[in-house]
Picture 1 (cartoon, helix red, strand yellow):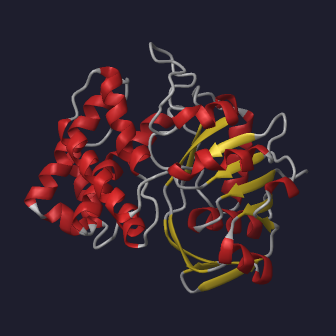
Picture 2 (tube, one colour):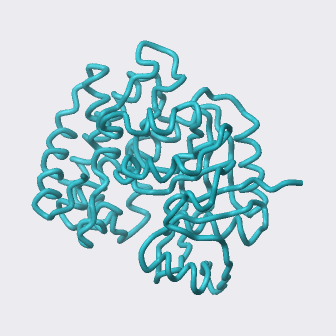
Length: 330
């Protein structure tokens, strides 16, 4: 049987974890797109995955020039949302007539309204896809949605440590159980990962986003980890207000959030003294993923006529915080 050709665009923590698991299992013909010291380490020493006390090293093609790899069956994008528009030309070099692009990216996706029946079908979101770079450069018909649940980190160039979680939920924008979704799910499952094919991937996007849209910006503004944000009555109240505003937006779009707001906050508190990705980016001087996690929800609120006053206030504050730190998205 011919193995699917799978290229990971953005082979950092999550992309490296995913690529290593697929390569170790031999369930796909894997290649990686990376850059800088991480790429040099991948080329020289291979990709090392640490899971608990187990160390695995695999050698797979790695490049910063995707044209060298040729057309793929699947391109799995695991970049930060704010980095994807500029990466479209790189991605295009990997596309053949039937290439499926799997968007394993946080936040509201640029393709959200593709094949979404209703008054906003095929509506474009300027906050996450300025200038329609992804809509026109990739094309929504190629897209397979993906909600990434594992946590991992790049411990050193070429070395990825898995922290927790194995689930990569997949879903067509249309809700169909397509062959391309099932083939990829089978490859991921054979690699020891959980890969359910959802009939409503948008609901799962909102469930993950629900925590990210409040705790990420609040942590960047305060410097506090998750447990402190949830324990403090003031910041907990702000987070709760933002979540309720976002829930009203989601419900206006036909989404039923299947968990109570206080249970979702309790789940965040249980994670402990974890620094959110936005706080980590701020501390490291990297662009912060503000628009996909917060700005897009405000844009959706305006679209459906749902007020988001608390979210809008926090969005304004975190944008300025990022600007002053030199971490504002390009």
